[in-house]
Length: 446
Image (cartoon, rainbow, N blue to C red; front, side, top):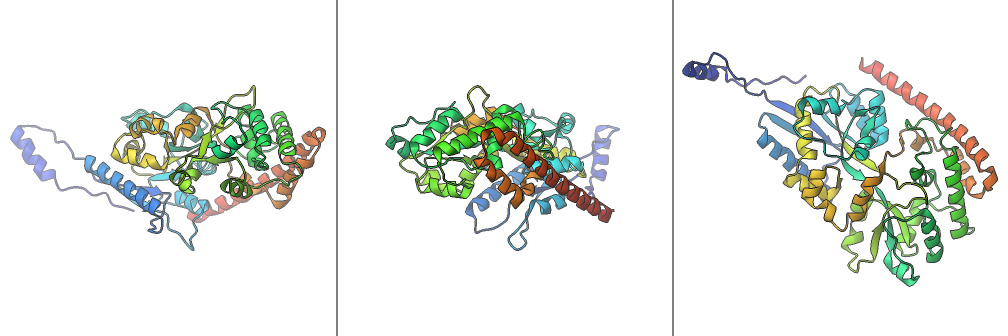
């Protein structure tokens, strides 16, 4: 256990009090250290990470200058055999001495942390200690909120959008996609581009297509498929997806994300679905080396008659419930995520900032490269909780989903229901397995 350090200033205060005739003394703020855990590694092989980590260090240094009694200690991921899993991160949060400020990178981790009561609700923390408004739009805050509890301050957002080759559109004499366009228009364009299927045939694609219906393929808690994967919305959407594949792909087999990415990079496919962080970290050169401006972005389509919706992933930071210094941790989070200064403006180059003040100061809203992703944030909806579903698609279930491509429209409701029942069985098995592991870990810690 860390000892609290007390500065030897009592004698000095007594002298001051005697000289001024003051009978009360004013205590200096006690020195505090908070630990800030980063989803990053210290590795000189990755210049982008080095640059980002230098900005993190500069941020904590400048914060300390403004708040001398608070020291922020940066802690990085330690790779073991070049691996570090979400389970490793979660074990750290579950430990007896977790970092004060903890990264929340996915809905799956957020849901688990909520169930295990490991993170503070930041709304009462902000009301008690805050000096700044949380200037983040409600639809973004909702992505980090469970049962009314804001468990993480969403610092960055990662919307989906469409990349397209203007050269192929020009060759086919097709107008570029407009800001507000539909899946029906997307289907018509796909047929004219002659580039093969532009959508991955997968549960993820089905869930993305369903975004405007207000339903997902699993329950909000991510632990039930019946009533969701077999819902009327899913049936209608899958029928469209099958029709799209039959018209665009003919007898070609369903394409994977890797296949589609390879086709797009080789100019064999005119459009590709992507996310902002992938574009930035994996394909930063997609714009740096695209001198002729051939590649452009378009918004995520929606079905005619439905609302625009984008399942936006958010990344942010929570405060561990076991933190001994929640006030100071929140004070730093305000500085790190909600305050416009040189460090936050520079860090905004690495992501889409959710804070209105930081976005304005960094020029994010007027950056032509960020225009489309920024616009998509207005239509953000909470993404699917993948804590169980990502592991539930066994080879048998995956094959069952792929078989839906050749299922007749009239048989789709029954086929989806049968698949949902099998998926629920696997979800229940995984949930029981996870609960047992967590129970055993809890007994060991006690």
